[in-house]
Amino acid sequence: MTMSKRDTYTPDSLLAVAVQVFNQRGYDGTSMEDLSKAAGISKSSIYHHVRGKEELLNRAVGRALDGLFGILEEPGAHEGRAIEQLEYITRRMTQVLMAELPYVTLLLRVRGNTQTERWAMERRREFDQRVSEVLKAAVAEGDLRADIEPRLATRLLFGMVNSVVEWYRPGARGAVDGEQVVDAVARLAFHGLCT
Amino acid sequence: MTMSKRDTYTPDSLLAVAVQVFNQRGYDGTSMEDLSKAAGISKSSIYHHVRGKEELLNRAVGRALDGLFGILEEPGAHEGRAIEQLEYITRRMTQVLMAELPYVTLLLRVRGNTQTERWAMERRREFDQRVSEVLKAAVAEGDLRADIEPRLATRLLFGMVNSVVEWYRPGARGAVDGEQVVDAVARLAFHGLCT
Image (cartoon, rainbow over all chains, first blue to last red; front, side):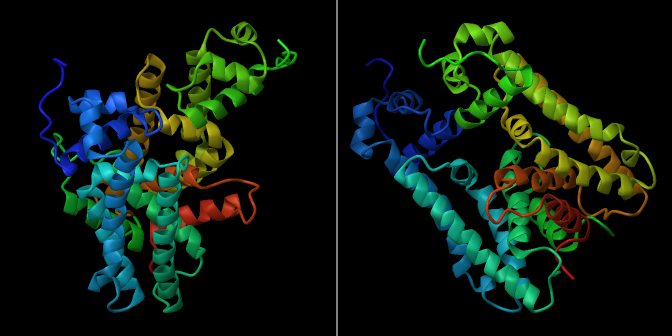
């Protein structure tokens, strides 16, 4: 085929192309034909790398989930008072989200039509649950306000952090610096907008 | 056709069905055939009500935008200090979002492939801009912290409020009460999670 280039893809570089297409067209709306066009290689070349598009989805959301669950293994997520752990986790979540932007974007859009999607949603809930436990501990230690129900507080906290995928575009003209975003999220979440 | 029912739709009830389908399948992924099936009336019956699916999109996002811009006309959005106006707007935005849940959900998902979508995105930016001005005024009056860049603060505030569409399901078992959500958003946004 004249449109095909030589297949020099690595697993990671093929995944990067696939994730871009999934985010543009939606996972359900993406065919192997779309992936073949975007990558510029034949469908059979793609099948040489992966069994199908669900394997690509699995690897992509797996990468996002590994990034997020990895945070919970770091010393900062265990040391000190629960409020310090929660602030550490919040900052690191924001960093991981920006570092793995297309992968986390895809994870957040997954809706549960296939086994991989249901697995990803289950893992997301598990992560939310783990963070919610830390938040509850910080309330119990008297460092966080008790007048917001913990599940609701966790949802709003995640809502704020996750919303960063909607507009954060590194390298864009006038783009804010990543560390500025991390500081802003932490300040707003823990101390609010008021002086 | 045996599957068709008598067309007893009003403009509002047909719109409600269309918005549900748009939110499930995505606007781009929805055909007139899909709308006809979901409504249980023929395509020509739908064309009796509207010129096409873009008109339905226009009405749906228009309803969400009217709800949001309506807030800015209310006395609470103009009276008192800027911080009081901003808190009023934040609370009302959260209320409108929950009251017009499917319409605001659709508005937030619009991506700009058609003229109506581009118009909706332009109006959203205009709304964000108006709220951002109130936030800036509150910083200038010394009531809001100056160490978060105002555009960034507005984005995170909207991110938190808008994230409510992801999980708020009125009437669901164990669902939180709408006013509890409004209070939680206002407390977190203005005073943060810390005691």
